[in-house]
Length: 207
Image 1: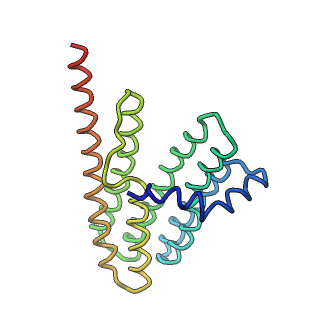
Image 2: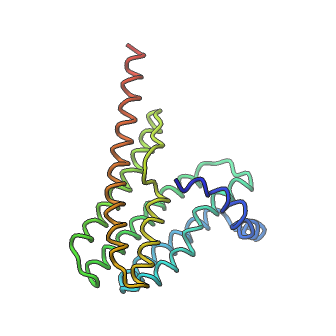
């Protein structure tokens, strides 16, 4: 659902940074790598220390690299597919660090086995969501469906986590994690169902 805001951020809010990085000769791949390292460090360091709202602020500064690198590549007319491959691959690293770091928080500071497990469920289902789409694309199917794609999972975790820690309203994060775990699982099921329908239709047309 958040893809509708992508053009606004890339075309208006982040345009000065995009143009500056291009003038400085910075590669989109470098932006991708720095963004991943920043998100991963922010999650694994701040969350593991119990500093949740501080970690969210730090992470947010690097999350926008996911919009900057793609816009830079298009603006400079990049032709190869390596940037898209690198971006998708490092997104999995960042996701693992985010929900892994939150799992460490629930293990070490806000002790709760239940919410630790929910973090791991979201992490795994998020990875499967991305894999399902990639495998579907490889097989010639379209699996671009789902109620909890990556931007939704990020915002759905970071915003409640910030206010939960800052205002000591932890039920906000609890509700968000339950919702994300269910939504991520439903998204995987949606993609499996959609690809199954396409596969049966293809098999029927070839019979």
